[in-house]
Image (cartoon, rainbow, N blue to C red; front, top):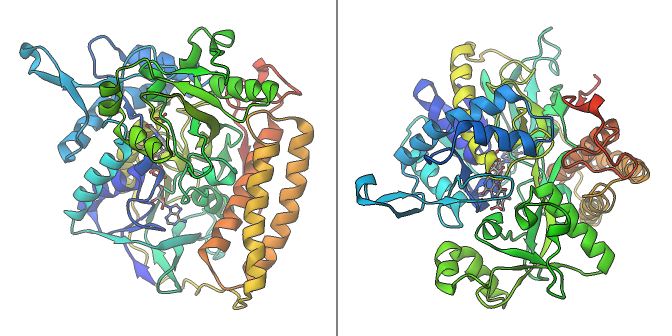
Length: 534
Ligand code: FAD
Ligand code: SIN
């Protein structure tokens, strides 16, 4: 058993920001399943949305967020996050984050933050570090964490399940006492205990066959919270990014929406622009609309991708503004300064998650959730581009303050049972694990993708239930491996996405069901909420 004051599961922007805030008050364990920088955060390109320019206002950022959210955002949460954004950005800069700047008049100091534009934003308001914003955030936060003697990072440690008083049969109020954690290199399971546990485990892009997300994104936090008895909401709202690079060797490489913000235009294979038929903002319309339009045009024409064309901008500008995209595409033989980029939509962001209030509190005492794993009500039915990094920064601050204020005394003298697992190890059977992975991801892509129907959802539900039966058997009989743990989690998250989708008899934001093609006013402001029956 390892005892701490705070356990942080995940080392992306949410986990690191929270850890830095609570570290002056106690010992912090950051548990992270791969290398410390490996996270969705690390791959963020476009930037962080925040009001920093004189031409912009909180009211406009709030309005854009609510419009994208299609009637399902919680307006008080939106207002708080938007209004507190600039202060959190300033703290990030003070920690060492270097945002891109541009020349400004001498009376304004000669330099100002360069602001990018993305879909659904009525103003330029995206702070960025060229096209590698996430990498720069991780660098700055990890450097700050390294200066904190109270924080210990456990890399290659994957959280398996939450330890809760209810599971131990102890109390009437369900309280989180920590988590069982598998040390992948040491090949053993530890019980990490603390009065405060933060889920900052990110999203679940890997539930889908095609995704912009790295391999860590298997929805572990949502699955663990659900098994622990927390409420999960709005999982039907999976955001598909319209422009993932289409190339047989490129795995999950995003072409930032900022490329369209700088004038990039979507075209069919014959060069025809098509977005004017779908939305007045054309290629810069909100993501749900652009992704559906591409999906529909590809299905109509049989094309395997569309083009994103920014060749009309000067080469020098493109190389300076998008160095990572330029270099990566060159490696695949595509020169973005001279030829259009082949792109397709791919699963990108989980708008739903573990239900929290504005302070990151879940309905399990002592358990907090921040970042992509959480559902705060900011994004509603469709996240406005670059609002997620902002949400993580602001909510980490609130959750840390609340966790410090509410913290109960350290957990001592609790007889936490040792982790029990099977000990079978059969390489032939382990092949089945990888087949099940593929099957879930493919069926989610085919049946629960950009366009859904009742029938496809029903089929998906049946197949997932069968696979879960099989996974349960492996899970209890075989030795723990991270593949098996993640398989169990993606199956749970797939189930939650399908069940939420089945609960919503309308189309709204990112959830589009051909059997109910329009929003139903009775469902405006209604979340789909699931809780495990004990
Ligand atoms: P993450 O950054 O994903 O971190 C999750 C952490 O949890 C990781 O360290 C992971 O290893 C760890 N973890 C997961 N499961 C376990 C487990 N069981 N045990 C231990 N550790 C675990 N958003 C924007 O606002 N602006 C952008 O420009 C932008 N660009 C993006 C580009 C790409 C390619 C992608 C994929 C996403 C982008 N997003 C962007 C979304 C944004 O990056 C994420 O929503 C955000 O970074 C999530 O932060 P997080 O801290 O919640 O999770
Ligand atoms: C992008 O750069 O297109 C991603 C931005 C986001 O997901 O918020």
